[in-house]
Structures are given as structure tokens and as C-alpha cells.
Amino acid sequence: MTYCVGFLLEDGLVLASDSRTNAGVDYISSYRKLHVFQPSADRLFILLAAGNLATSQAILNWINRDLNQARREGPHPAHSSAHLGEGSASGTGVQSPADLLTARYLFEAAAYIGRLSVAVQNENHSALRQVGASGEATFILGGQIGGQAHGLCLIYPQGNAIMATPETPFLQIGESKYGKPPLDGVGHHKLSLEDAARLCLVSQVITRRSNLTVGPPFEVALYPRDSLAISHHVKLERGHPEIAQINKVWIESQRQALQQLPRFAWETP
Image 1 (cartoon, rainbow, N blue to C red):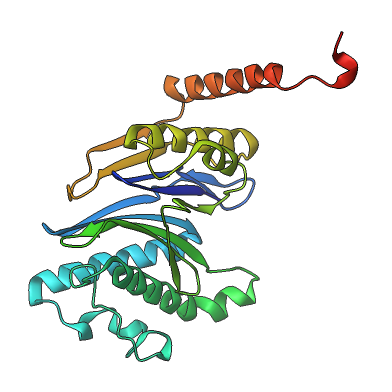
Image 2 (tube, rainbow, N blue to C red):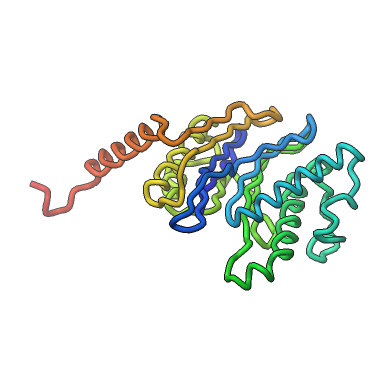
């Protein structure tokens, strides 16, 4: 299991992930789940991945393959992962962009990744079904294309996507339930990038405390609006003192809040 969260802010984006991968009680390892792509100077994308690791890695490989081929030969729709599927997305008649280099809008980039995800899952579905395994993967895509607003999308295993909004500014994938309360409680669209990054780290650390399938290294990337560059990329390794400090401060704040809650009637002198 894994846990990733993305935050859409007025001033930009914050994306955070853990790095633990669990393939059984006796096989726990670490893989990066936060990936940055800058196909050209006018665009930047940050991709978070959760779910089947083989599916995620296959999609990352196809993204890089398409970008490399587009740089060598020029972007052509026919080059986009041709053997994984032809024609329009999901038979709707809506053409998916060839790759991240040709997308004009963030939703087109999300559609491209969704199409890759469905194609990879379909290619391996029969073999996985025979052993009772799922090839599903879920993604959060954040970024900005020059001339367009920055944005954040959650891409479902079925290939469709939803966008974060100022009213619903954060998106989660993976083991999300334990880290959701602090985001719900104090998170909002107008937080600073730094406060949102701290909040995302709190969400990661308390999830780890409740679920051992989530764990460090924790990664956080900050993207200031219209900069087309990552301003800060923080990686907290296992045993980093800041992880323990975040946990300590958060627990102490909860203890103080408990003492400040209204007293029951029978406690009043």
C-alpha cells in the first residue's frame, strides 16, 4: 500500500508521497512514487502513483519512451504507445494527446496517462486474474502548461479523472483515511505553500503511525504558480529527526486540545 496527497493552492501546488511498497508481510521495500516531468520549458508535471507497482512502472516507462521518441522524431499522435491501443480514448471519438509534450491543457495530459493506464491493465488483465491479483493503479497529476492555470487531477484506474477545486483543494490516493482528518480540519485553498507542505507531512506521518504499510522516505514537492519549476523538493529518510519532531508536536497539540474541550455537566463544580 502507499499514500499520496496533492494540494491545489491559490499560490501553487504541493504534492507529497511516502515510499513504502508492500507485497506481503515478508516483502516490504521502498520505491519512489513522486515523479517530475518537464518535457519543454513551457510545461511541468508532477505525477504521484499508487496501486500495482508493475502497472505504475510500465506507465512511467511508456511516458518516458513517448517523450524520447517525440524529441527525436517530432511529436506525432501515431507514436503514442501504438501497440497499447489505437484510435480515440475509450471509443468516445475524443483523441488523446500523443504525450506530455503535445498536451495543450492539463486535462489532456491526464487523459493521456489514463489511456496508458487502461491499456497496460488490459494487456495484463488475464494473467493477473488467474492468480487473483489486481493490476489497478491510481495517479495524481499536478502541474501547469504555459498560458493555462495550474491544476491538480486524480486519475482513476478506469482512465477517467477529476479535478481539484478551491472548494475541494486536496486529492488523495492509496491509504488515505488516516491522513484525511488534519487536511479536512485546517486545510484550505489559501494556505501558503509552506503551511500546506507541513500539513501534508503531518498527514503522512500520522498515517504511518496508524498503518505500517505506509512509511518513509517521505517526499514533498512545492510548485509556485506560473514558475514552471519546482521551488523545493524535500526528502525525509527513515530516522530523520524531523519525522519524530512532527509526530511529537502533533500528538502534543492533540493532548492540549483534549484538555480544552468543554467539560461534562457532572464535572462542573
